[in-house]
Amino acid sequence: MQIDPSPLARPFPQLPEIAGVTLRVARARYKTWDRCDLTFAEVPDGTTAAGVFTKSACASSEVELGREAVKLGRARALIVNAGNSNAFTGWRGRAAVEAIRAQVSEALACSLDEVFVSSTGVIGVPLPVDKAQAGIAAALTADPCGWQDAANAIGTTDTFAKGAGASAMLGGVRVELAGIIKGSGMIAPDMATMLGYIFTDADIAPAFLQEALERANAATFSCITVDGDTSTSDTVMVFATGKAGNMRIESWDSPGADAFAAALADVCRSLAQLVVRDGEGARKFVTIRVAGAVSDDSARRIGVAIANSPLVKTAIAGEDANWGRVVMAVGKAGEPADRDKLSIAFGGVWAARNGVPVEDYDEAPVAAHLKGEEIDIAVDLGLAEGRATVWTCDLTHGYIAINADYRS
Image (tube, rainbow, N blue to C red; front, side):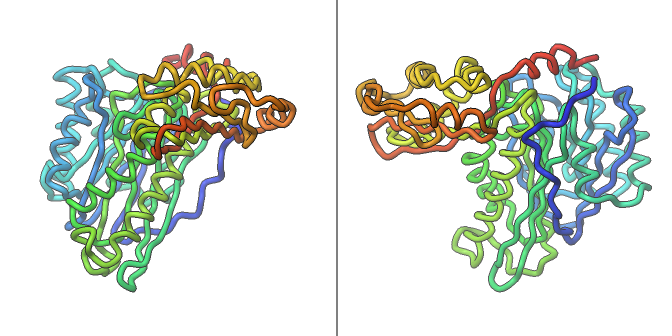
């Protein structure tokens, strides 16, 4: 199936090399395509790791094993398989992951718990162990590759490679961060979302790295949605090689802790927004800002209810300034709201204030705004100080076409 590039695509950025990280890709041929579909990232001994994983009750064996291994906070390798999610495959799926871990563990002379595996693609088809092991063998002897090659190899229905980077000064030492991500459909995070991997040369203690990732995730990956569906394989991980030479960050009181956390959040935000820009069939990137809620969590849930509404999303696709659909979505969110205090704006133009339509409301500038690719919706509940920002895309015929033909 040929997928046209997203009109919201962004060029792949120039990402920094991360000391200690070696990337390789190979053709495992999980599907009948002529492309690399196995990514192998090797990191040095002493690398710390953190991760957030899907809360799906039908999670893959990769996720189950990853959840346990990440508690130890260390890593030597990451393997990502594209084209087969290996989810809902029972003992055969788990055996495939265990075989991959054993092969890599032996090759790198490391423990099984230092090898992380992710898979993405069709659900319900066991990962072919022979293809996986042949792909790993090829990757182990392949020439190192760059970030863009790795980003392309982890994609499935993605229409462009996605990456983001940042730097920070930690006690006078410059550290670098680089991340890649895949995701286009089945995007409605319930912890993290998609498959995303961030690497840094900073020296970070595992517990702090985990806490920083969870904070960043709450304001970025957990604030995007494409279609309201949470994947069985969602994973976001961070690997810190410690090669920059900074004084190790152990806690929020450590010099540079806030700077590192801010840089990590910047990378997460950029990657999350790139996924929305590549939403299946997307033509418009939508930012929903909710203010005046009883709490930040309540604001986020209201924002997600708006973002997941098919009626709101199709109105945006049709460039229809139907703010009544936003009212509907706020009302169904199950969060505190007062009809007579609710205000709604498109593109900075208020259509309703304090529960009633604005008397001199001019729809012309709103209509012009909706013809663009970048759409802004603001909601003020007028109750308290809670606020959140959620990102989504419109819902078009393209989404149906892509998913109706997904397995072909």
